[in-house]
Image (cartoon, rainbow over the protein chains, first blue to last red):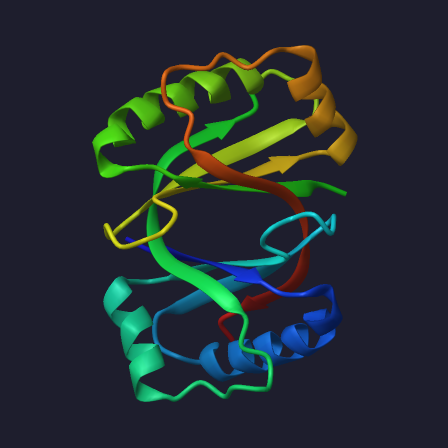
Amino acid sequence: MPVTLINSFVVPASQSDAFLETWTKTARAIEKAPGFISATLHRALHADAKFSFVNVALWESEELYRAAFAQSPVPRGGVQPEAYPALYDVAVHVKAP
Amino acid sequence: MPVTLINSFVVPASQSDAFLETWTKTARAIEKAPGFISATLHRALHADAKFSFVNVALWESEELYRAAFAQSPVPRGGVQPEAYPALYDVAVHVKAP
């Protein structure tokens, strides 16, 4: 059963462009890893959001997610924002009737 | 273009069940609102996650999202966790090649 990685980032507005560049570079390095399904980087619509970026990614399993980051050191740029990564499963799903 | 509401909740383990109940009740009250598309409540796999629950929901527009919460007061239970709601659009989407 897939797991969802949700990573919330605190990025000052002045660093948004650099963050986007670093994140995209990291995603390109990870996308070929076994178990990677998809990643969606969300950008806050308004400046008062605590988390200006949130990545919601799907992995085939926790083991494959951890292996991907353990085996290939992720390229890092100058932007190292405060981040809150954690793995989740789906507790409740609601659709419009 | 749809917007994504991401709401991260800090819920003590002892309140998880009560939170789930309150959240589901709220979702049922909101699901018929114009503009609501879907909501997915994620639960952290491990206790060390700062945000033990994260809701990722889709709305048809920011206006309809705001109208839904302005017009119908949301039922609230005893659990009022620390929460970080914000609206997002998709900046980057990456899929496994």
